Length: 71
Image (cartoon, rainbow, N blue to C red; front, side, top):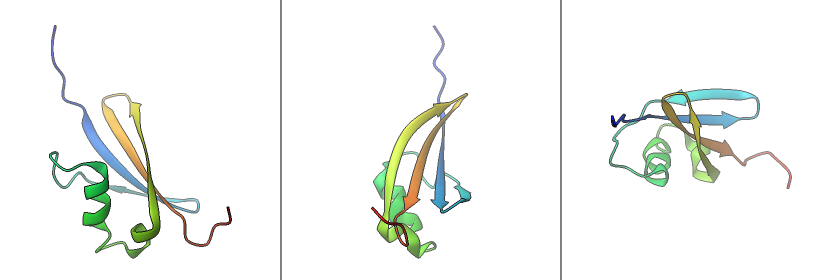
């Protein structure tokens, strides 16, 4: 059996726009990554973490912006 480390990817969704954010530190949890990037992307302060979703050789976490949406 062979171990394969999956690459992590973080996607910021704001409306229909998507921005892929590189993994700053594999030791950080998804919430910590959200906090790390909130200095650069202020909309992350009110975003929620969705995932993980497994795609090919990646683990994808999505940060969905809640600002300006109803419900």
